Amino acid sequence: MSQINPSGYEGKQDHIREQKTPPIEVFTNIYSDAEYTISFVIPEFTAICPKTGLPDFGTISIDYIPDKVCLELKSLKEYFFFFRNVGIFHENVVNKSLEDMVASCNPRFLKVRGEYNVRGGIQTTVEREYRRK
Image (cartoon, rainbow, N blue to C red):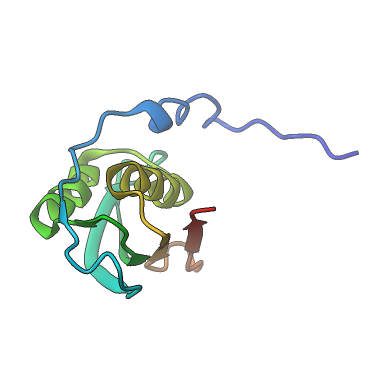
């Protein structure tokens, strides 16, 4: 049986799921009868490493199949700018942003992929998908 080895991070990310983030606005999808994919790439994503306080850089990619509404780009840009001053793990950025976008637009499908720049010789990629049942 493996044991969890607590680190200095325990409890420091517990607030992320409830953290208030900027609203992601939507607009009516006049082609809601069609199934099509919308893709966004945020190539200059920045957040703060919760351990060092230094910036983490990466690319966030979003693919989704809208239903009744689509995500509005300006508010999506402001949403991701918010993280520039947040100490947050790579995994939590991907999970939090997916959950916030699903809450905003209730898509048929949504995938968020975070590809982070090399730090300490390790390149990190985190991906999560949502598919409405």
